[in-house]
Length: 627
Image (cartoon, rainbow, N blue to C red; front, side, top):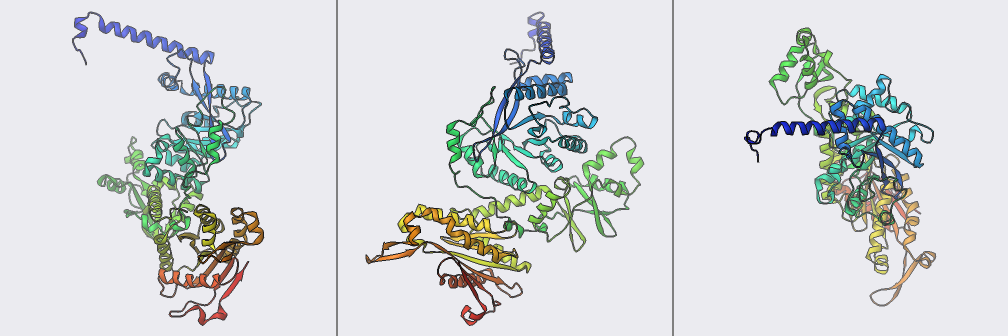
């Protein structure tokens, strides 16, 4: 409650409060200067752990002020440093303290050091914050500069150059708190860090929030394309650790694994290592890449106005002023797109003194900042992701131009691309087989229908296990489930994840849709590996005998061979008017032929598929192989 008359009722109350504040301020000022002069900082180290094995990748350096000081916590310490304009000086001191103690303790692995963009760009001016700090006992390639994002980055070009300068020395780069800052997605695109830390917000209670899980899966997809290693921050419970592992994130840190300490832990506690030794619950693979390869750039097309490259800049300015929600304009030359002009950058430049007068009547093409990425509307989202990952990184944040036979259609954005990938993951999950998490019947049919519409040649392989039921009866349904999961894993490993599609119909039946040219070699690889992959599930005497004896329902002993795998393949002629259901029927017939062959077998239907025909009509044109 406020008392506006308090100063009147208690003479000198306001002046007394001001004097106390001045004393506190003076005290903090003295404490802060003493910390800088005497280097009175304590480094703590928190392990960053490989959540697959329990090995320690390295340590993040965390700083603390004097224990008996109001500046003990780093937030208070850096708040005062910003107030006095001493942020970079304090950062350099923290770096020195961390490196000195890391070497003194003889710690192994990588040292993650927090650095602000302001300190990072010092290298461009010839004054790296690490100058003179790296000494004997630690190598440059053991240091990871962890870029913190306290404010929006003003100059990406300067920061990009600074990162390149540090990388030349062997240093690695990490992006901290992905998802927290305003521009973290663009920073990832521009800087191509070696590591990205997923903000603790996305990890907290992730098992209870499907939206968080979808965001993290999308982050995993981007990391896979950009070859970035992910670190999950803020793991505080066993359930969160389990989800991090199940989503395929390789590294993690947090209080549940180990708190920051001095000296730090040299190995994980035994109870943590025991958790690492267990399989995570329901390990869910990333979405089948081939599933999203059938979605094209047209799906994320945004209709955006275009102007001629000779149009006056004032015209472009007026268009942006008239349409508040318009963020980008395409620029055409002789009807063909040559680049993009971004609203905020144009308005920012024209807001400078005299710039509208100087540039208003000049051609707008001078405001095209970057070489654009131009893609055809039929480009798959899979290939589009590759293009963005391999090209100049600004395309993810700036957007790209979509054309049809060279004619301008509109633009696409990185946000829309990520959203569409997320939606397809949700769709795939809705119809996924619960045991293998592979796409089920609906996605299988949709995938085949899309390939038929695109008139792109492909082959369909129907996969079935032989003698599975006797094994299930003898060894238990749990062992049977493991055989199913091993088969799913084998099929994924033998397929080309970029173009081939692996689906699970149900039970012991699978479908592989091959677009890879060497599909027959891949089928043979499945035959070659299957027996070795499944052998550990049998008793030694059964392996030696090649099977086992059980009683049938009539009490008669029957010998059952070990489980084998049958593949029936149909090459699809997309010029003929088939549906996905007809293709599946042809593949099932080919599978039936394969099952007639003993052992691991492959039957390839080599004739052209003709309406109203059956396999038996052209037996000389079919082919079979066994292993």
